[in-house]
Length: 326
Ligand code: ATP
Ligand code: MG
Image 1: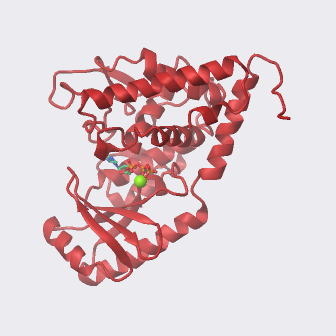
Image 2: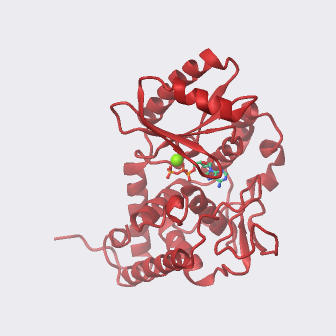
């Protein structure tokens, strides 16, 4: 028979916390996954350099920010000087024999999506969207600020994907938006779990520093010692509750840059938007994909439903509560 958790008031929270750590350990990107992505990146960079001698190709996103899982795609940013559309068409012709299923996604930032031939490794390449390099290393610094950050974010990403609210191309939340929402929840507790790293270490996140130097910037940031030592299970429950019940979507902008929520102004980027999440460097709305009321309602409803299920399981001291929401 299944073992019963010990009967202390927080026992199921400890159980839940253990499950989150277990899930994280099982799903997190492995060094071998990164090595494979890096190998493909450097091969591609060499091919591109035959045409563009000074071009540089950077791995960004969850492959580099420590918040990826084994199945995460590889985000790439190609940095070139000069005419971007000329470079893009050149890229198409150049894309060599070892990649396949190439498609151009005409988003605000156009993306070239392709797969490494014969494998399931997917790449999303943009040209000159260097803010992605800056914010990747900001997120990476947050992932090291407290040992709870990585498992917390990974479980939230899994949860959102499971419930189909993690797809900006379908009008729901991008992973990047979700990560900023988790960080801001942790920043705005009465005892913050993490501070604003941009405010505490402005010299490490100077938005004007050359992109080549960005990866070196945050290396000297020590871990943050918070008075809030709430277990992971409690933080996950609190995160769901916060966005299900407490957060006023109509009034506030989520700002990781300031470690606060900011009043929504009438400016174009916040006006009539259901969800406002500020990009930490460019200060535009990263959640602008959520433009349908029905999708917004579905997202909120999912926060509420998962919160109530998890809370009920916790109150019942039930075993394996996390499987009820993921
Ligand atoms: P996953 O593991 O699901 O692939 P991810 O962390 O890679 O998640 P994505 O939403 O795929 O997150 O975004 C990849 C990267 O692209 C982000 O880490 C960020 O650097 C950049 N990015 C995504 N959306 C934006 C945006 N709206 N503004 C600026 N940069 C963005
Ligand atoms: Mg990605």
